[in-house]
Length: 295
Image (cartoon, rainbow, N blue to C red; front, side):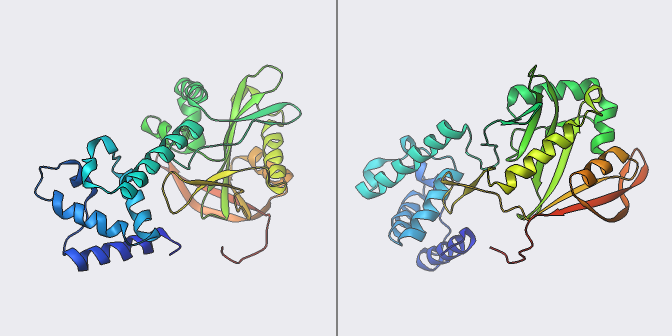
């Protein structure tokens, strides 16, 4: 089977038919529990179902953050123990390599332009922007259309596969950010921001233009999780169209979109509400690949 939902459904139906209960991985950590023997039998059975069964157990083991030290090893076969050890090794390797078990991280190396360096966000960079917006709450709220507070956590997190902090090359000063956000796997939203005192210097255009070039050169990469959690492929994102949505009052952003080759497609009336007042937005698209066939 080639998708995780089909595997889960297939295995869960097989277990239900065989044992008349749902397999529960956490019960295998309590040998004294009444459900231990039932779930142990189910584990052996699922393991015997081949690759689909092993994939199901793999994901359950990671989902419940299981560790072999909590299992009674004498109740498992050598092949089963080797399998569980492989899961733990793979999980640790992912942490060592990427610093995370999530595919939603930026693995790209820094990208240089004439005047800028685009770097993946990290904790230090995120804190700098948190502090900036804390000191400039009105600017944050006007830019995002959100009340400052917990909203900040949703805007400058590290988990943006194509999110970059913008630095001046000559001074390593952080001046803004740019991000391609996945909307539906092929359509990505473009978000960009430049700190007030650095605006009107063409930095946002320079950053956007370079990322578009990197896309065309297939030099941008993302992690793609396989059927098994913590097992990733490194792939080029299948970005076929970029979208910029900006307020009708933001003339600078509209000029940037047009300069970067985007085409204006229309106006979204009553698109959002900020401080009890609705606003309109214009939307721009840049088509990179006309192919409409889904992968």
